[in-house]
Length: 263
Image (cartoon, rainbow, N blue to C red; front, side):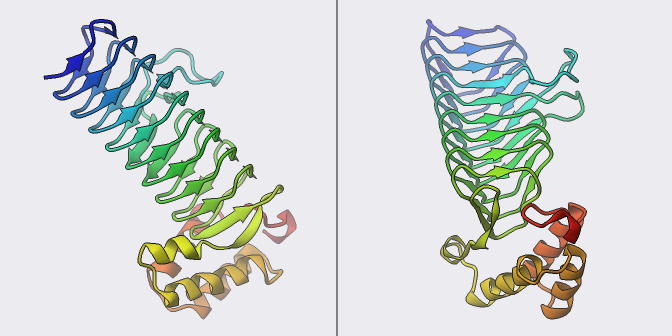
């Protein structure tokens, strides 16, 4: 049975699962679903169209499922999907999508720190760490196991690969491939995310292959198209090479920190 404070507002149409705790002064709108084991802290708003999975904890003054901040949205019924086992800290705002058949999606096992804003129709894939004050615009994609340090700005439509590390304060206005570190402004390639990769079971051989691949992309002075051909010729097929190649092909070769005349 849910533990709901009498000082919270819960719309009668909201679907609240067992073992949910809703603290005083929380606001739960109509057409909301909250899964088992979630905890909603005081002064948090869970708004219409939110579908929340299990064992999430949402801290004070966060707004989940807020109206999208986009002039293309004309009041249609849209959605925000939150997975399982996420921690969403204070003053986080996550907007719903702008299209009824889309939606903003947060995967499982994410840690989203205070004052982060996640825009409409963005995908946060899962196992991501999003630092304090990060701003993510609409229609962005963040791969699994990415880390955004505090103050990162991710522009609309950008894609971030798996296992990336974006250093604090970076402004990202393009696509960042898997396994790399990005730093400075303008954002630039800062090497392979080797420390994190080793901690999570990547072998030295795999990390060497990643470094070889990105020497072609970022340090050879050639176009991304030519770098891609060199990667396919230089590295044996495997999980690491395929992840890099498929990402670059999937974003139409456009990577951040590559001069436009080399693309």
